[in-house]
Image (tube, helix red, strand yellow):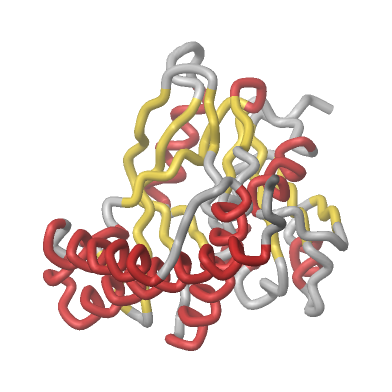
Length: 256
């Protein structure tokens, strides 16, 4: 049996409502690898029915390390990394297939991600255009070890593909607030461990700039009420992250 040419990797945790559509959008691949964090629903069973190999781990090492686990289990010459709440459009699928069929050239490709917030597609501000490096040669890339906001580190030239990666993020405001709290906590822990300083003044300053950058500089106001909500969301997450950094720093042992 020939080795797979294109592998898709996905990490999951209780994604039964979204994993079917995610995997259906990448049905053109040769192999699907799902690394699951012991979901309490039938995510793993659904992924297996869709043809994926599923690997389960009880611990949570952070996004970067978890995605590296998935990458380590892929066999394809090329790898496409997506999340369970993302969908590959037909235009992007065609671009991916052309890219992996060629010889030479870039070793990795950026995709243009289009996100939906509380029911509306966001086309301005901090969220668009959102360039994410997701397609790469397996032997030429790895994931950073960041617990949140992990990235692909590629060893060689990169390019950008036509088409969009649809991101069905945070369908409700409750989802958005829960994700903000979770991400700000993990990011703060990582930054505090590196010695970064937080505090009220830093929280206010960075949050104010985050709002102005997204809403005014990057014209988030063109998305109307949704654009205002996204700018406020980004600013609030920034505010809490810097306060949490200060709180965590106070708990760290003092160096003598």
